[in-house]
Length: 281
Image (cartoon, rainbow, N blue to C red):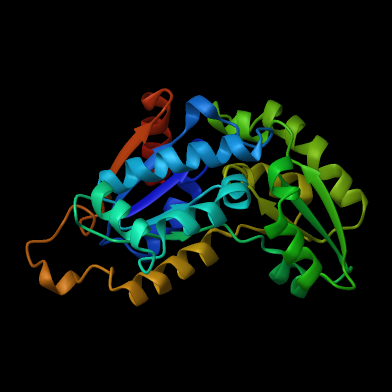
């Protein structure tokens, strides 16, 4: 079972890509909406939430976990891997065995990768824009990626102010969405960026509005497909991929209805409505 969590419903943009590649798998999704957004919260706070959610997902059957949140990846994934992923550490193995009811002795984590490398390869103006939360932009993972892959490239950064709140309210187009998006991407466009990286899993829900304002000559990168491919590779290496041939009776997922359980620390109705809207697309 694949566990996925985010500060809210934004991680459903990642679930959509993962499910597209792995429709035969079962899923458990946790939206930490009662604590959303993570972007302005301290690193210690986000790590604490990530630990609690991780242990919930493992207890509920997750065999691998995707941290479908750029801020949580930046703040917490190193800690999560240190505390839950190494079966050679006796204390770790024993703890995970206890949490999982003897099912596993370790759990791997897939995080969000800042898509600076493909953006740097695609730009023709030599200028790329990065839209992300404050937590992601200040994180070492993003800074390392920028310094490694954007040499000789001008990187213009901006917080997608109000983006998360819009998506959590179900507003992805219209006057309010356009006004909010315009304020954050205009500085990138005015600086000459011809490629924009979306550094938060909530932001792809605003893709239509972002592209409308950015225009046809600007490339907008959603990192979710690359994350889904990496997850599939790790699952293959861990022997976790579902064997469809061994299930002749078929599953709901094979019939086009995802085998997924949804949990939220906030209002579950919002998560369910957002999920149903996403699946109908």
